Length: 117
Image (tube, rainbow, N blue to C red; front, side):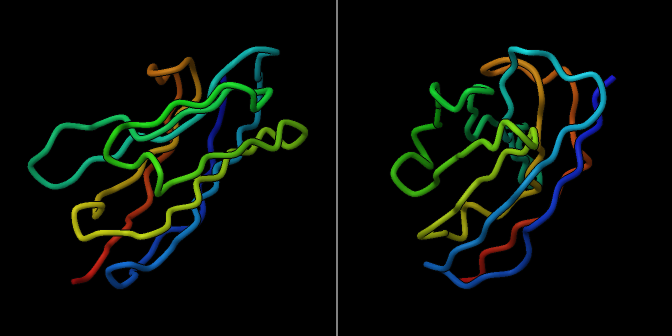
């Protein structure tokens, strides 16, 4: 069992920045990915970004590439997502996941990100 605790999120204006973090605890593996999905009202949950435990491999959706940066502190099993140049369409609940590249085996509770125009 793996538990995920998210922090960050909130309200920001168009063009602003926010940082999300997610710490994993429990029975973590020696190989895993962590990352984020997001879900806006009326939409399906969509992949945002993921990173390997080593931090070597990163993946981004086209919609956030070049604006968001994912990073990993493997000693603390903590993943962070730096979100810059935020747009109103980035407004969603962001869910941290632990699993593989595009697959969540464990999920956080979600944190709200709201970008006002």
